[in-house]
Length: 150
Image (cartoon, rainbow, N blue to C red; front, side, top):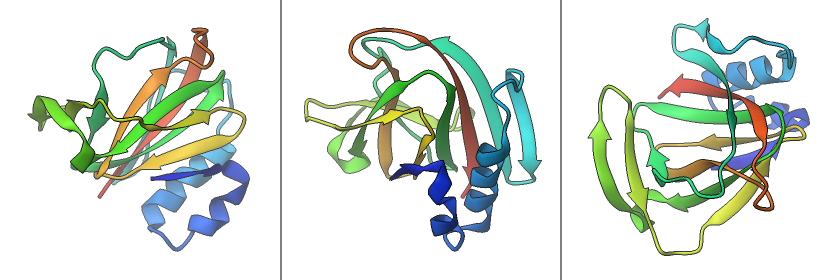
């Protein structure tokens, strides 16, 4: 997992070219971009969505096998809880179609706040629970999730 500010993306230039390309997209994207899916290259796409954050995410933690997630908010703030996959208990088996399995845990997670230029990168070993509200106050957010095929 990586949590950093969009101004620091050159730090990750040597990580994977597709990750860096996704970060460049986030650095340049307009907050007015329409909700939808945007193909960045053959292995990278951006999914733009709007929704209201939640006090509790009923589906729990998620993890992906085929994709690395880069999550970034264009509007609003969102809290994301994270735990390593080996610290989670599977509740919904992996779906090849959705590239996701879902998990639960009674452990205290690491939490971060997305918004104000901060992004997070979640690798397949990173269980993450997005869409949580900050300070128990739901708000409408606009989010870009970059899906990078690993």
